[in-house]
Amino acid sequence: MKQPDKINPASTTRKLIKKMSFMCGDVYEGEFREHLFHGEGSYTCRLGTSYHGGWNAGKRHGNGEHIDTYGFKYSGTWVHDKKHGIGRAEFPNGYIYEGEWFDNKRTGKGKSVHSSGTSYEGDFVDGKQHGNGTCLFSNGAVYKGEWRNGKMNGKGKYTNSRGASFEGNFIGGKFQG
Image (cartoon, rainbow, N blue to C red; front, side, top):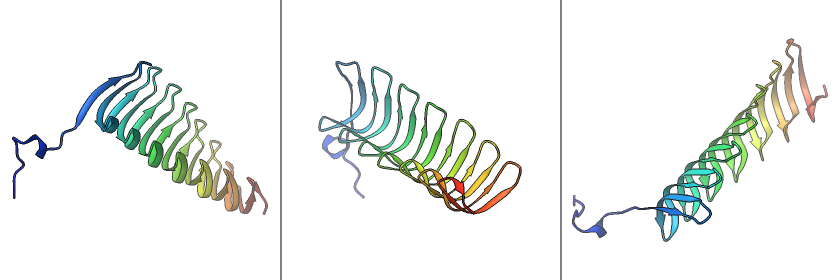
């Protein structure tokens, strides 16, 4: 097995790490390729928004963490500057989502918790409960079944906080029998 040539710099891969400050006050520190952010790096906006993680051809790509000045935080996978894959988001209102993302939207399997204590685990489409899932309401009630556009819709079972159950068809969040 041939050992790498320690004298010839062309035989090794070097990462170009620079710090770039913009006139607006933003700063990028990290790897570059062909004058674009590429590899690992951190970008901090003068207003406080920041991103640390992977870059590809100037766009967030790979694993990274984005924090904005309003209190939103996302840690997870990025593809071409969009949340895509597995990630966790914390919103300023206390809402937390952890699960699959597609094209910047909560889509796929996921878990959410509202600041009220209500939680949901199941399918999401375009950021709404859609498909099959279980919701534990903050008042102690539970719904397990089908969802459509964020509402109980289809076959399911709702049990209220006193233990009374309603099983059957739901439309637009209301029990139909």
